[in-house]
Length: 117
Image (tube, rainbow, N blue to C red; front, side):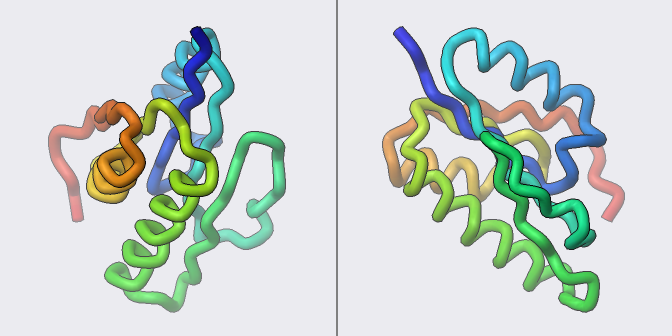
């Protein structure tokens, strides 16, 4: 049985090797989509299976998180995945809320033990 997945990462997926390995594992079970964030609008390409939230560098951290969280929840409602992966500390809350609102399974794969900020 195929299970669709949505990976939510507050950061650039291109630079997260662990998230890439988890994506490869999830793709074994079905289609996977990535939602990540960047402050660089030039990196906001429209690759298939990927959605980028562009965060403006002049925004404060609270606004960046609110914009990202709202986009994450919107993307879960749009895609209706079977599984939602939180790929780092800052994606945990929106991924958990989105999974609960849509009935998706929630996987927390945030491996950070200390958040420097």
